[in-house]
Image 1 (spheres, rainbow, N blue to C red):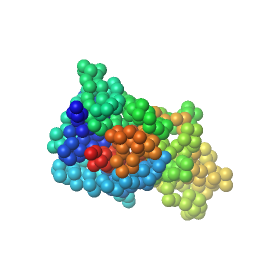
Image 2 (image 1 turned 180 degrees about the horizontal axis):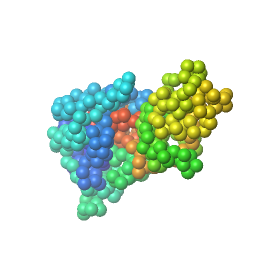
Image 3 (image 1 turned 90 degrees about the horizontal axis):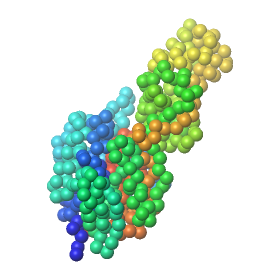
Length: 403
């Protein structure tokens, strides 16, 4: 007896729904299973509720993986413009996030992220996709007649069979939304490797001694260049009630190894020694705090940075005080205690080993008909729409490969 479905997709998130709609419209019979009561929950909360659905500058350079070349094939065959054309067919208005003197390439819905979910569900409906929510996956295995997936929990046990199985259940980030390690467990069960996972795009926590002087600055944000492991990001830093966040911190968290320090430049592009020298000559009566503020640094942070300097005027700075002031502004060094963990992480670093997958189809090399797409794979994007673009591209690559 032939399997009832051409493919079962575990996961009704960005990658799973994208794959389902595309495969269904290619004439394949598709069943999508998800434990949640609603599809696309992580899409719904993304981008502050407006979904940062792609990035105009998305490319392999924006991803972290043990094999940095793996993502190239899928990304080249389904690019940001392809997704823009899809949302425009659905008449979804969008805009690019702009920052002073910078075009970030980050695209958002003018309205709600629910528009993206509705679009994906509409595409699934066009393809005759069967969507079953509230389905906890209890087991999955391969038999002679195809892949058998058993679900149950909130509903009675059911068995589902398909010729192909697509794992699109995401990573471990944001467990309160139901995220789990199911995808990695299934990969290991079928004999695939899994690169060690950890939270990424995540706020950093500080030790009590590091954080105590910063408590009064909670809620303050400022542009900065943050460096770790010879990697740097020039975006905003936010001081929180537990440590550091903001785009630059989230970005650098994906590169930061435990116990390593970060270095924060609060005046990117400024030759600080030249600026100090000029201020001492031309505005010697300025206080160090006022000097720091003139660099565009917020007043409360300027006061914090100037506190160790006893000189009242820039003209009175000693060599040691000049060095202290310069270091405070350009090389503020902090060693994080850790991160906020999966509960605050936007994505999961690591995942199913790309060495065990085809870069063209996302199919497991050792198990015919088994595919892994989206965040569950060891392909992690930068902040700003890149992870969504990987979801769309990997989903489309998989859909195109299903025979």
